Length: 229
Image 1 (cartoon, rainbow, N blue to C red):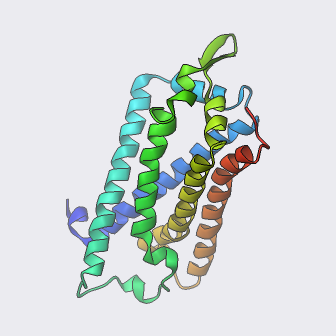
Image 2 (cartoon, rainbow, N blue to C red; image 1 turned 180 degrees about the vertical axis):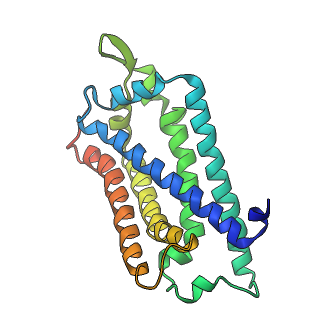
């Protein structure tokens, strides 16, 4: 319990849970990119493969991810309040770290991402938003069986400017959050120095940019009429 009672310990927990979620974002993007047809059956096959997994695995994974998100948010709020409250002793690393727009607004970019996650879950996971396009209500044939038309749901959703705008805007917040958060992980864990820090900053920015472009490419190509259902 001592790790949660110290600011350094809480920052380490934030760093670890944050990077675990970055890994999830990478894997999630790879799965979503099946909408471009590299997987036999496309995103419908990908979605069906996920839903065919044993329920305990699905529930366990979602609970673990939810726990990491809650830990990250809870300690992020705590540390932000402490830092803005004028703590007498600041982190030693902050004296060597140049403040950027992304670093100074982590709490706000994180809040936007949190709101977007709720919207995304309601939209594509639970499908209670825009029920007229819900995949569960429109089945299509796939490998000799009828499966939810996830492709049709995604295409119909992103043909809506408002929906595409929300997703693209959320990816901007994700880019800002990760461009600082990834390099901050190495700094928090004590795995960086003055020589390696500039490299890690560039690496974090490149990874964040790659995720941004990968995710935003889907709604943009659909809205532009390049990718069709």
